[in-house]
Each structure stands twice: as structure tokens, then as C-alpha cells.
Length: 245
Image (cartoon, rainbow, N blue to C red; front, side):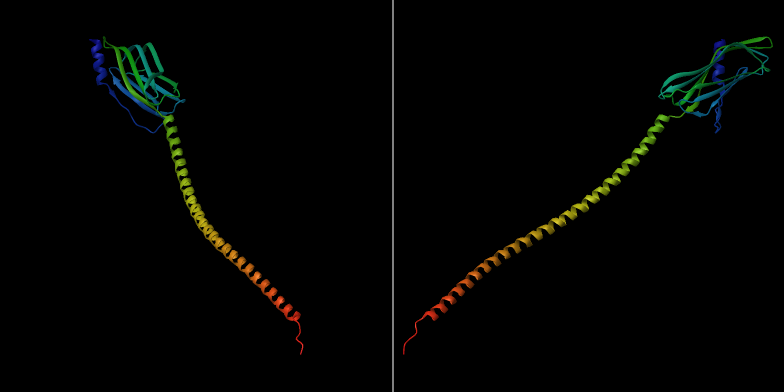
């Protein structure tokens, strides 16, 4: 019967999660029969840093005997595999309206833990009031806690941004080189056309020079032949015997 009552009270307990831009945040603020439990912790952190946890237990009842109290804080390796990081435990103590309990502790966040951390309270206690004793043997309540930044993903996103910028820069350089290649190709084509024209002119001039050389040779032969003819003629005229009268 006591166990059923514990479950019923656990189901109807009110949990308040308050948003804050402060470093610390109330992740659990619950009233169960006879006890008010509040858990404050670091709002956000990163792997390889710490999470500070402050737990307070208060009551307005004359006398509460706590057999067992435990707060377990767990993270998630790679955001998936649960890993226990901290246990705040106390056993066999009394709680009354003049002596609240407070626990302050911190835990290291391993390098591959990220995402939401998870807190789980386990409590066994009894309430004594006006001669009546109510026993709550197994109160359990879980709640999300500190957000651990995924620095690995953030690093990949940063690297991706840098890579995208480098790809854009390479594309721009490639486009510039393509334009330069096109310009050089056009220039080489124009130079090739000029070379062809010059070669054709050279061939034409070479042919003309050949014809001119042949003409010069023919002219020389004719000149020599003419000179020989004139010399022969003059000689014959001079050597011709004179007629006697």
C-alpha cells in the first residue's frame, strides 16, 4: 500500500523547468508529500568542462527520516550512449523545518559527451506527523538537465564553411584560368593564321626570286652573245682585204 501511495505521489508531483540566461538554472523544482526538492545546475557547458549541481531538500513537517537519497547525473556518449557522471548520495538522516539539506558538487564532462544531460532522483523516506508515520520506500523522478554543446559537430560545420569558401575560391580561380586559356588560345590561333600568311608570302617571293634569277641568267647569256657577235663583226670588218683600184 505504501508503495502504491509513493507511485501516486510521484505521478502527481509538479516539476517546474525555468528558462534563464544565467549561468545556473533550476532544472527540477518539485513538491512531494512532506518534501520540496530543488535541483539547480549549470545552464550550458562544453565537453572537458564542468557541471556544477546544487541540490536542496526542505520540509515544513516536524520530522522526516530519510533512509536513502541519491541524485544521479548522466550524459550521453556521442549523444546516444548513457554514461553516469555524478552521484550525490546521502543515507539515514533527518530533515525538519529548521534544518534543510543542501548539497553542492561538480562533475567533469568527458570529451565525447554532448546533448542534454539527465538527472534522476531516488528517494526513500518516512514522514512522522501527529503520531502518524507514512512511508515512501521508492520515489523516483527523472528530468533533463544541462545542455552540453556538440563541439565536434560545431567544428565540422566550421570546417565545412571553410571548405565551401575554398571550393568557391578554387572555382573562381578555375574560371579565371579558363578565360585566360581561351584568350591565349585565340591569340595562338591568330598567330598561326599570321604565320600561314607570312609563309605563303615567303613562298610567293621565293618563286618570284627564282624567276628573276632565271631572267638574269638569260639576259647575261644574251648580253655575252651580243658582245661576241659585235666583236666578231668588228674584227671581220677590220681584217677584210682592201680592194685595189
